[in-house]
Image (cartoon, rainbow, N blue to C red):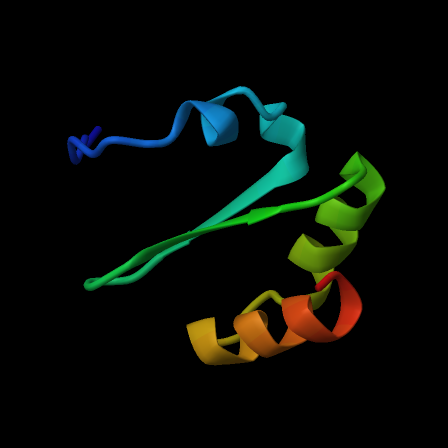
Length: 64
């Protein structure tokens, strides 16, 4: 396990983990938040293999 210490806002920590999707690359960590678990799962299934930029666009189009 690798842990990278960061200060995450309490508002984000309070959100159910099943409503969040996390993406990381060598220079960033993205956390997307959804209204329902179904939305989160839909996002995860439909963005497999996408770049960060493509996922950002997909999220904005369908959930933003």
